[in-house]
Image 1 (cartoon, rainbow, N blue to C red):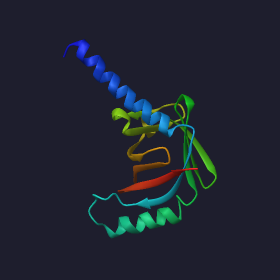
Image 2 (cartoon, rainbow, N blue to C red):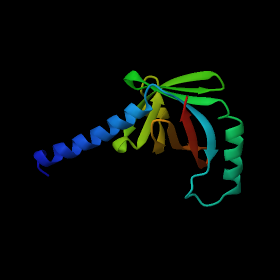
Image 3 (cartoon, rainbow, N blue to C red):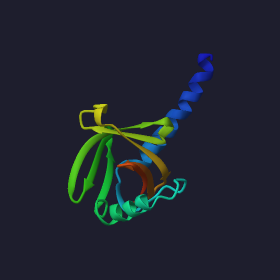
Length: 136
């Protein structure tokens, strides 16, 4: 493919990632619900775990995306800092340790993102869950 055709395509991808970053940044995204992804086959253990996670681990959880790709996850008033980057045209978030090492990388699929709502598909144990968050 010629460079003159490739540059506009790359620009479009960069714009979508930039819009995603703008929507994520400088907000406190509090978890209010944990559900099973709609296309997953029914699994009673997964459904039970989603209820347990909502009432337990994610009962007091929020996320923040800041300048310089800084990511803060606060669970039960205990903050943990890392770094984030956007992949796949802003549809996937890569979360790594504070030094940027990908040895402990977590990939999060964005399922919904607007000014007030941010839903993400995460993996916990053997199952995937959708974390539903709202801007505070």
